[in-house]
Length: 318
Image 1 (tube, rainbow, N blue to C red):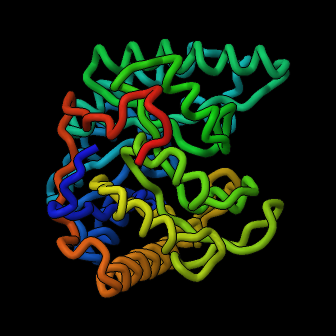
Image 2: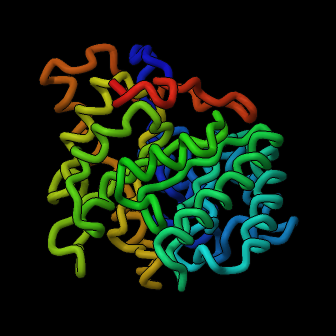
C-alpha cells in the first residue's frame, strides 16, 4: 500500500445505493463533486448478469460522466453462495467480470469468504480457502485483485482468519476490503479489527449504524456506533491511500431486499457522502494527515495492484 498520503484519498460510492439505473447512479456521485464510482448492480441486475448491450450502456454512461470505476462488487463467496454450494457459479461470474473489469479499467473485484452451509468447521475452512485460492489464481492471470470483505463467510469477523486466508493463498492478487459498518452486524469493534489488518487493506467501505447485531439501524457516517471516525484516523495514520467508498444502507439494504424510490436513495447517498467529507475535514483540522486532499488519489489501473504494506508472516501490520 502506498505510504505517501500526500496524494490524498479517492472518495467514491456504490452506485446502486444511490439509484436503480446507471444514470441515477452517476448523477448522485457527480452531485457530490466526486470522480469515482463502485459498481454492484444496475436496473436490479448484478453487473455480471447484464447483457453485453446493457453493460456497454453502463460503461458508456460512466465514461460520459467523467467517472472512474474503483471496484466492482461480485456475489462470489457471498451470503447466498455457501462453501458447499455450486462453485461453477462463482467461476463463471469471475470470467464475466474479468472481461468487464478490462473494459472499465479497474483491477478490483470484491468477494466474500463463503458462509458455512452444511459443512463442519474444519471442512468449511478448507473449502473456503481452496475456493479463494482457485479464484485468486484466475484473477492473477487476468491482472485482477480480489478483495475479501469482512462480511459473509469464514473470514468475516476474525483478523486471524483473514490473515490465515492471505497466508495460505500467498498472492498479491488477494487483498482485503474493510467495511467499517459491518462490526455492528457481526458484533465486534471495527477499529480493533482494523488495527490488526490495516496493512493488507486495499479498499474501504464506509457505513455507520446503531443498535444490536440482530437489528442494526443504519445512519449517517459519524452518527452511529461503528467507530467511523476512529477507523478513519487509523487508516490515515497508517498511510492508507486507497479509496473510501460509501455504502450507506440508508435507503437500500440488498440482503434484506429493501429499496426506497430513487429520489430517497439519491438524497440519502448524497447526505452520507457529505457526512463523510465533514468527518475527513474534522480529521484534518485535528492535525492528522495535513497533506490530505479529496479526490487526488489515482485508483490503480488494471494489472497494477498496490504493493503490500507488509510481507505476510512479519507480524501485525503497522
